[in-house]
Image 1 (tube, rainbow, N blue to C red):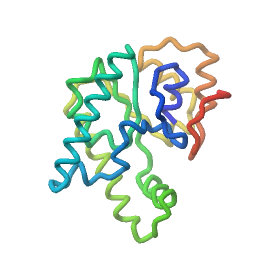
Image 2 (image 1 turned 180 degrees about the vertical axis):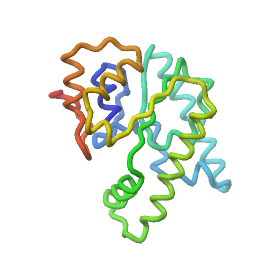
Image 3 (image 1 turned 135 degrees about the horizontal axis):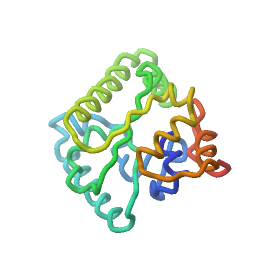
Length: 191
């Protein structure tokens, strides 16, 4: 949702976007496999991923003055990219953890017995986000998914203000129209 609004602001989120959720497929080539970030037996995979991510940041810095990406697992490797990021602004979206876990189980067609593991992973991601926010000094915006659904125009305004963008009333309205629960399409045409 937030990445789609940023795209509506004409900030490049690059070409290889997951058509279901605005996730950057080049950064998300870890395929959601968290173990590469926290299991020592996957150190080689982690280091390879981080090196590719650094190369992507460098490439995008050369092509765009301002750009962004969405990866729900970014918190596992963000510290490794800080030196390469130019004037970063971080937007962290928080959503009801049980809802996120439930959606993952449904989307991946997993059994309900996996719910506790998924819930713990979501809580771990949010805990890591909070730790990062407490330690890092770069501009950061926290967005509540549930509040954004209730107040889409205020969310769009806050996001534009945070990013330092002058956004017309018409474009703000388009962004607010993009805010819908459980969006399964990243397409921004028609908004």
